[in-house]
Length: 337
Image 1 (spheres, rainbow, N blue to C red):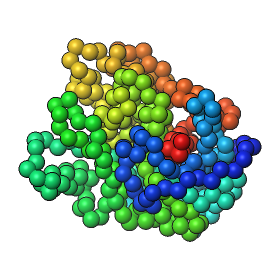
Image 2: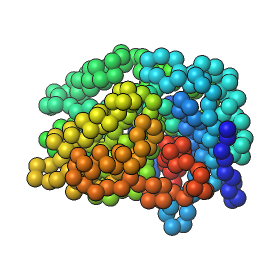
Image 3: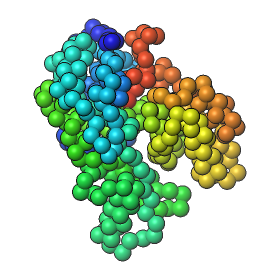
């Protein structure tokens, strides 16, 4: 089933990206990059395309978008195993999807990868290295240990981010296996499409918090079939990024543990977690927005309501159009503004 929307407006060509592979992240994500306004999202059960435009009041509006349910087992997201069962079939599905949204002429895209396909870490460097080479050696060792794979097998994007309260250097690091990334690139290349930005779904979703930021801490809970990714931003800077793999009946307990870590280890002494955590965005599968909000408020003592698309400055074309299905790729599309 394909769900689509086409909105009338003049044609605008997406601007070219600077790197066809996995780019550096935070400096470009948090400043003003030059990426396409069109993006693709691929998950295990659904694919989506979206073309976003900015409105004069600073909000975003979907110009064209479509979603389609994928055949079972066509995409099997995994960090360690092949992801795409039939590349030709997936290419056909994506081509038809773009056609249904009126986006066949688009050649430049951003791509939101499934959560289980990628891994994201915040790496902290203790102490002061005696040289740049030593610092790089420590960082490489932590990356390989954190991702459980040799660096030469990974396509890695890393960016220095805000230091922790103790003044230690920190890096946001994203990895996907080169052979897995190549599967997706082969599919898109067969359609004549070029990808300038490739990121995991949660970083696309996180753009709605980053771009509509407020002082205090913001929480993104991004659920998927095998668990969830929890991201906490402090004043727009990544503070905690944790992906948890768990069974569906373990989701709530694991989310509770994640919140306890934040409440007991991260919130400054003397500050209640509920007063520090100011916004909550719940996306994906595994838990309802209402239940996630209940757990957050019970754990932190806050009174948060999970944010909706209109809270984040996105105008959806209708109530039947799911924010969940397009939030990742649409978040990447905001990077064209």
